[in-house]
Figure (cartoon, rainbow, N blue to C red):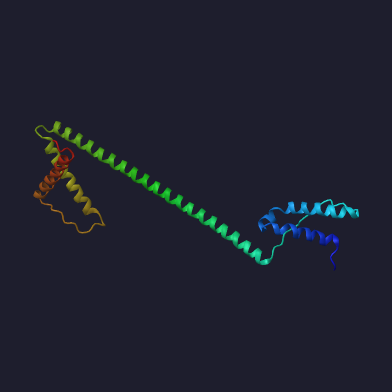
Length: 198
């Protein structure tokens, strides 16, 4: 079927407008192209008694290779965005995990500090109470007795644990005195290092 002026003129006008644009702009400016075609058709057809009311560009159909390339570009851009989002999410998870770990260790440290303070308070109360109730005892005597009690409690715990390996601990009466002296010497050395001017 031969081209008529009503079909060939719009095609010519579109072919004159579209090559000036890249493909993305052509899709975005469909209405502008339609308006330009409408204006040119109105000029050309009014001489023949025709009035152009409206022109529509229904769709832009690029070559199949161009479509495929555009789809690949869009897919690559989406994959890039998805990879960035995934990396950002992983970063947030690691930060939250680290913050949780730090908070857990901080709270564990507070718990240990409170436990040790309670032990010190309990020992002090025991020394004072024992010294008052048993005349002639010194604070050293009471601490020696507390250390011996803790030594035996430790041995009991080690023996009661089903998962303990073979542990060799001196257990004669002299060994208890040696343990007491070693603990006392360790405390004194620690005190000297903390307060070297004493």
